[in-house]
Image (cartoon, rainbow, N blue to C red; front, side, top):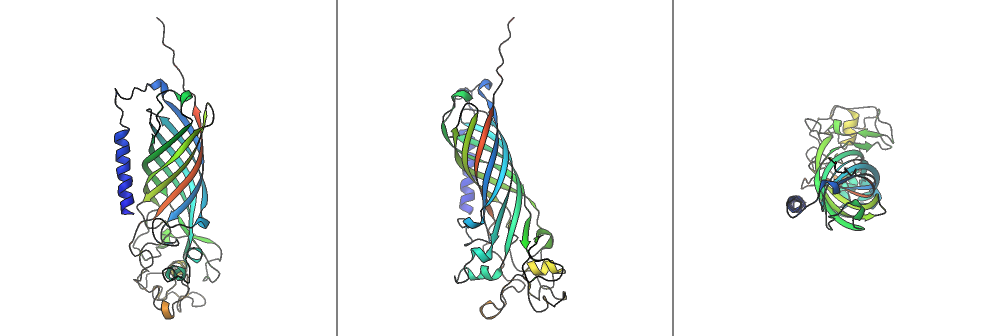
Length: 322
């Protein structure tokens, strides 16, 4: 993942250098510049701790969720455009579906039994570099144009966990609970729901008619948080949980929730999300044990979308006669 981040950074810098306007090499008058507005339908996936394998290339197609977005794009130069976009969508993951309980490398995640969904809102600004240039106006643009892009984004992330059938008093089975403020790994303070990311990727744009373009695009988001799924470190320290929700989503080990004895004593003798603490899983979720990826890698998400763009017909100013 570090290599991918390095490559994406180098790509963004190279894009900026290549696209830097040169007064002599790129004579592209303002009369040829134009704006377009777009609407996107997206498919979202994520890479993180609640996937079949904890590496960048691993995601489960069954966890794909939909999203939508709007954008405005400004054509500045024959190859270079700038785009500002707003989007909304959901990512999700479930150990029970992603991890094979018979796989020696996946049994840990299956026994962890974590699941989440995360409704995310994103604002992004990217530079788009066309691989086929257009020195003419929008009417003479090419029919097919492959392109690449890179930029910056900010997003709001709010992971929620689903309450199972064997929930303690105060938690209703089947409902979703916001996890950030619970500090399920015993953090001193809740992680921020607002984060930054580096979006980069590519696509192909097709001219439909005079004013409409359609594009198919795939973009990765390199984030700087390991908590898109609320799983990122170790199980909470001893005695750090004071509420039933904290103890339940934190695993349920009685050592982390000492003194917390809701109806039925579910946390005095174990409980919570963890499936088993016996035999090979003895001491599974005790304080300080690894809960997420051992390498502590940050989470990513990927957006694949189809966009319909409408080109706003630019006004042509006629020269004044004297």
